Length: 165
Image (tube, rainbow, N blue to C red):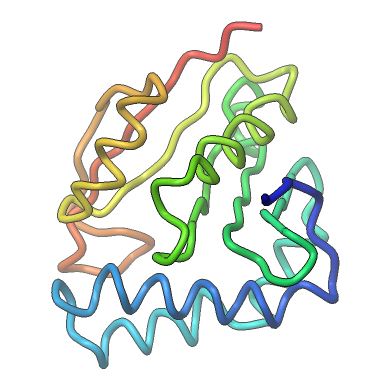
């Protein structure tokens, strides 16, 4: 059984490994191994994760069973729109997808921003499993982009959910 808790600096190597394995399993067939490796090295390295861990107005959580991490999530209040929370990362290791871990991670993250009225996430257009997951959580498509985080060739669907507490 996995429980959701706040991430610590000691978790970052395991989170980086989890993200690398998850990204390769999900995106190698879409973008190719080399591009995925480049993205993983840039976006999911321990130093990149460490920058997120200490970010103000954010929450970084992991799903832990005491032996290993099966998932992670990171969300932050939008600097320009304080009523908007951005879900930057929510990943579950392929060995544990479909067990409710993603739902549990999201349930924790959506309660961490009481001032937020909406939560937004960007999902690769080809990641149909993630699009279905977010739709089941109540997200709806609001836009489409031709790139993700400045990387052309990564068509992205922008989804948003109204947070009603």
